[in-house]
Image (cartoon, rainbow, N blue to C red; front, side, top):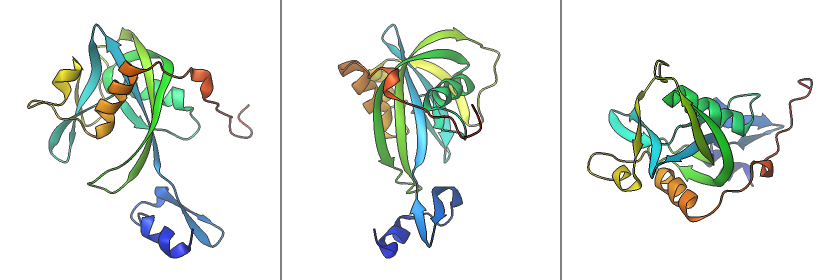
Length: 177
């Protein structure tokens, strides 16, 4: 890709989305994870406040340095909901560009089973509450999904079996073995 076209894709306000590679800047999307957790026909979601608006999302967040995608999914779910989960499969990989920030995201969505809940655990900043909703309640007058990935992840989880977790491979950083 020529530098001129690459530069137009970069978010100059976010140094994390770009790195120097020789003389050329290399754009990188934000890598995120999400868990789709179903129990009794309802799905575990978080209500969060984004730009002064209440929106719904799966327990989700960013991959942190040194952690695997699966570890990130378990951590984010615990931090945002107080639920300890066990991932059971990979539902899919999704690419989305936010119309607000123009940031691009690559989301790895996992199916998971809720194992235990710590109601006393404080939730991440911006998370108003965790709640269990039926799919028909997610995109309605009272609730609106944060992105189109929320409903798509649920639809994909309902319509097909997830890929096994051993589809993913995480190689430790050099020196961390």
